[in-house]
Image (cartoon, rainbow, N blue to C red; front, top):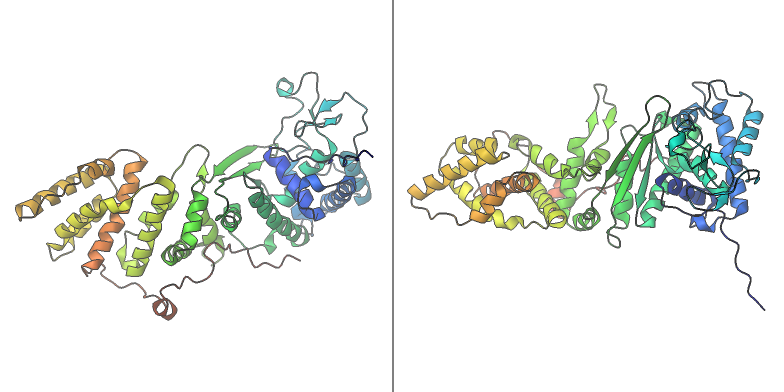
Length: 475
């Protein structure tokens, strides 16, 4: 007896960020492990659900539950029937319109391969129903003799399931792609819960100041020990006013960095400390930017423009010693050293001879004058070069042996980011050496660690990668 082949899946996962997000959202809504596990019944159930939610939002008035969901639809599907200014305000009629839009392919036109998954189809869609695709007026970029992009039913449903799986604001959406599918599913699953809350209670029910970077970092962290895959965030707006797309990515070293950081108490404390320092509120005390999101953004770079924002933030926030405890300085030094080692294969211990030389020069004078000279020169190559020459000459005249670190100095003073990273690392090395020599550098005294921190050297408080939105009740 010949075995019967299993029926082909009506939805195939493609490489397109929008299709992937929507397809994963459909699987999450149906309780399936993968989009390929969906069957025709799952797609029909999804069509019913999406049509009902769209009809509810399209007929809501400002101030009513559901109107914020209409804002989401308006930002993604401009001039579609549910978002048009002259749309039908009857919920039953709107649901019927959506059923036609998301219904089975009737095969009444030329058969073409789906633009996403290559399955045969006859339905053509464009900008009004397909986020970030061209209008039918842009015929020079559409398939030959076509009035739109061919899209099969599964991918049409994925396009309208996008808001369920994306990170949403009232005017934009963010989707995530990653070579590790588990990270993508984690991101989508969290957003499906969040979207449910938006549809029920609106954006005002969400924690303020939280962004997609914090959610993405948690997803990466969950699989950091087993997958070093980087992630990319695609944030876009699709309206008729000024559509835009912004792409930010982590580098391949971020997940190994997270894995190392989470096993080292000083790094965990430094990350939590950075989160607190970067948390922003307005005059009324309302959160403008959560610390979890602000810190997570330091690990995401604009497309093709790596910036090492974590290095910048650690250095910039560690020059006012009156606000820092010795433990905070040590923790930040450790976090920076781990980051540079994992992300750039840099060995910061090579800076120790120069740190010792600078500490010798600073401690040879009882006042804080020399330290302040170094603080002013520490971040710039030319002033630092002059200071190193001055310090080396003065110590030599006092009988000290010259430091043999010519190659390190060349790298330290090099133009570009490599020299800047080393200068930041040198700053922390010098502070550590001055601390070892018990030189008081701060005029005041920052708050000491809590009793818990003093009693337990492994104390690191709550999960340093949790986002402020984590404990919302998604009912």
